[in-house]
Image 1 (cartoon, one colour):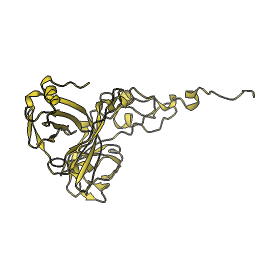
Image 2 (cartoon, one colour):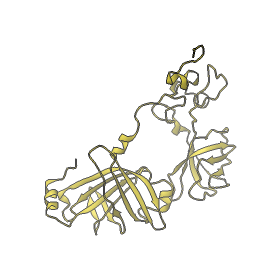
Image 3 (cartoon, helix red, strand yellow):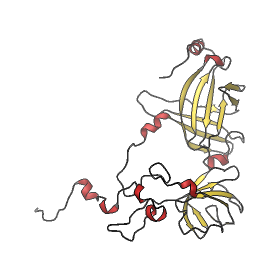
Image 4 (cartoon, one colour):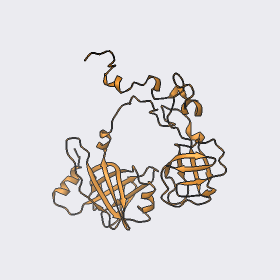
Length: 296
């Protein structure tokens, strides 16, 4: 249920045309952007909500049954707001958004909260962009709890894994380029696959801060899971952390199998999956048992 300050409710009840929508965007890199539909800038809570020509709100669809509220915002691409390079580089992915309405002629009346959530699907054309807004109820649509599985459930370096991954981050510059997906750094002497499944972060240019997964690494050559949305260049600064393929198959029936957890990070005690040797098959899970010896 939305709460509206009494003064603002009274003003809106008069049929006042002085109503402005305002958006507060907080990107994953902590950058804050604020815009309004009003014809001049508004100073609210220390932030200047700037006028952006072409920025248009869409109707907010919501219901009382707990389903996800949805809305969209469309606008013109601009260097000081949203650019095509930023969208392609993932800078706006999972951006937190708050939308509210005010009386721009008297901001002391307070605000009416419309919705809050995260940006979902983003797309752009030659001159415009479109962003889907998903409400906070989106989090209620996600499964909660752990899955019984042979692969580790933890994220490398999180509170369950406990590997101090940031201390293993290296920063360097590219020395050779093959494609947008494959390039090299001759100063990297780590063993093969050390950075496999790790995160490669761009440190230069308009894509600074974007991260993408490393598919493979060998003798100083990186192969990314997906190509970069721009042409990398010799001398481009980057940072990268080792990856974990979440395998731990050593012991029992697999004495010579691969174990990232033990061999790479010496962290088998914090492995968050179930050992393959004790992992039940489909027959056991479904309760089928053995059919041998049964009479027809």
